[in-house]
Length: 223
Image (cartoon, rainbow, N blue to C red):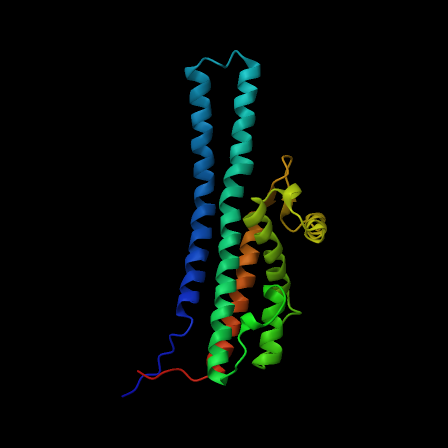
């Protein structure tokens, strides 16, 4: 008896699942990390008898605030956004290659000009006749993710180091929209817990939908 087991793109689904678990674990651990750092700061104040020195105590408390409110969330959430973009990009390349092979197309996605999202949209629409939903909220969030990922990967999230004025204007627009993006006092991009969660779900929903549609339209191997 032959079993129809379609294992195409299973690594993408595993990566999405692992990322969702990582997000949950990090956000669950963040309050514990914050409490640990608070305890360290209080121990230092007591051990060094700094409680009578308002200036030194204030400095320690300021360092604690910056660490727990800015550094720790920024470090982990930035990494999550970069990972999400990597999963999305590699998944779309894999899907494009699958469709190219199934349809025996001469042109590959790398033969199309433009940035990655432009090439992807053109290739799926015009070469493999598989139009993507580029008007939905998922694609809009993925386009946002592209800009933010570049700012993190190329500028370490430093707003002033972003070279494209268009990207700076976009980020300021998103900041004003109050969706969970901000530029903190030292010029670093910051992202809220809900923003990261929503971005994950948009990438996850988009990819799982495309993968399901590809599987319905092209045959898998029998085992």
